[in-house]
Length: 165
Image (cartoon, rainbow, N blue to C red; front, side, top):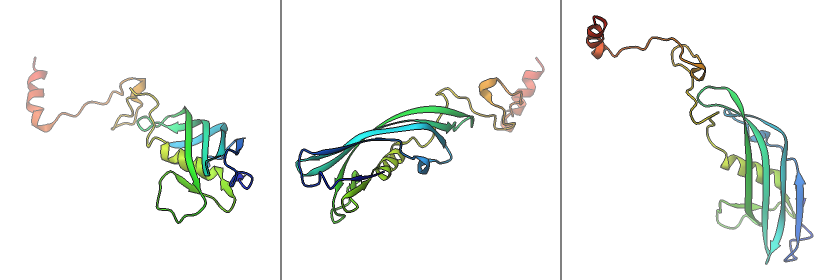
């Protein structure tokens, strides 16, 4: 969503508000497999003493793939965004600054970038997820798989002693 900021660029104390559904498909990766609609972004761009400030609250429900058991699950997210907008790229690299495109700003670019930067690298369906068996691939959350544990060859002699008792 392109926001027209011509009305507020030179008027301190003024602002523009927005409320829309951003497209977060660019944020999808191996762990984040989908986004359930509706995604909602509500915020504003304010001219505070000549500095343009972008603020937004983004709410979404992500469909994630668990890093341990590979099952898909829903993960609600609430992301507050606060950043500064600048007119030219002549300034030194500042990580939390986005630049105007003439008198406009692309709200989707800001929201998607901040979303990706603040997203977890891996998702777990639960903190105590046991994952998959390394041998047979069974879901260990549903119970033991029945695979026989391999004995360390150095401890095989001890295992033979225990079998005789």
